[in-house]
Length: 151
Image 1: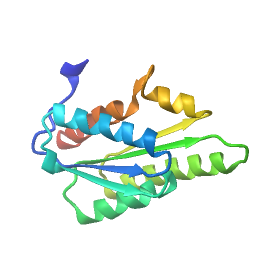
Image 2 (image 1 turned 45 degrees about the horizontal axis):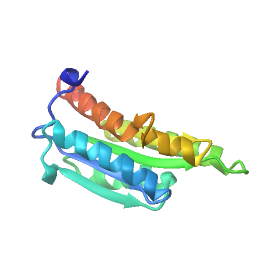
Image 3 (image 1 turned 60 degrees about the vertical axis):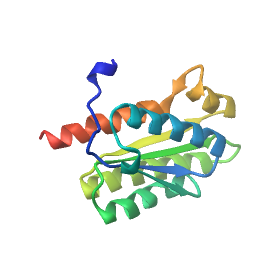
Image 4 (image 1 turned 180 degrees about the vertical axis):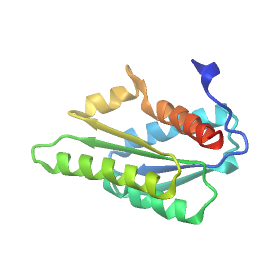
């Protein structure tokens, strides 16, 4: 429901985006940025930072949060299952790292990492038949930033 999304006017957001699976993550980034702009966030109030892979998203978020002045950070990545347990380690570490950074700084840090079995599934969730999860992450960031302002 678009009417339930609070305005982001006057708030600053960061997008931390993984370079790995860039076609997927750039689509997520575009969806998130367009959504923030649509809901009143000024282009100058959106910081974009790229990191090598999803595992580095938490560090990227922390570097930006250490500078201060952000109302939320959206971490965007894509991990596609391979033939080794590497997928499980990366996904678990990424999720835990992103959560820990948000709790450490008491700022919403949104987990926008696709964890799919195939590249096709990732494409479907980054602008394909299942929508764009980057949009959902931006909405979550807007809602959480508003919630923090009101508690």
